[in-house]
Length: 424
Image (cartoon, rainbow, N blue to C red):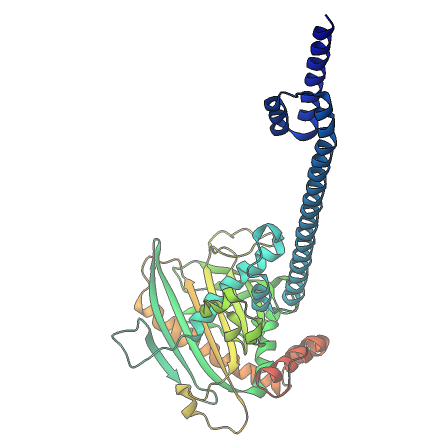
């Protein structure tokens, strides 16, 4: 009996030890204890410190791993916070640039930022920049007038006078009929630029100088500003009477001015931009851009503006295009006809108009381009001359009332011509 009690106590001690081993050291140690069959309680007892030490070592290792993991998480969170700060700085900088009419520079800053971080304003900047890029491409593409086989452009004529200019056009087909695309290139002395921009900007005075014809009938009967959307950007309503049997035409026109005078420096280009030089807008700096687009066209940016309903007997036209203004390149083909010691400015004006006709008659093209556009553009330049000389009181009053705006235009013009440095 004594022997059996000893064996029973030994067995119970062995079970307790096995459970302790599982708890303290894991299944491997417990299995080893089972294999050794725990010959004596002394041997088993002597192993307990070893098990405790082994467990302690494991705890220390896990604690160190846990601390290392926490450190890595903290570093990642710090990097994430830094990234967020960088993005916020970029978004703020884009807002400031856009408010200063530097839309393409603002879009450049936004490039590479995930869409989830962009606000509606930033999407509008990118959308506006895409339209400006297309206009920039159209207006800066060289047209070889002598290459009749590889060009869709047709020369309507060259106009010689105090300011020479040329008119080219081409017809574009659309599902509902034809559209007329037109391009004018004009070289002017730089002293005439601010007066020209003032004539363009003062849309409420269009009726005071735009030409009108009684035969055939063509007259601007209304020109009103519906909204001022920026320093120079605005929305205007222009209504025109046209020859019978055509209906009167109306256009709700949005004009957006972009100061793209400052160029991007090489260090501003990140790897993504450098990999695709055609997308680096800054390489096309040195220009003022004014884009025009009717609010009925696709790709326009609605601004919660209540568009007036179409009047009975009136057709609302679709128009898009705009101006690019830059220091005249010394290689421009029209430069040989100009002789001036002062800086010269090249103005390129392109537009596409849908006259809402299935087929545009040749007679309409001749009258519209040669008579209407040619006469209107020539008158536009003459009006700018009169503004420059202070002969138009209404324009002189408008410039005086908006002196801050026109001082800014004059300063930016000097920067464009290289007569002064851009402000930081």
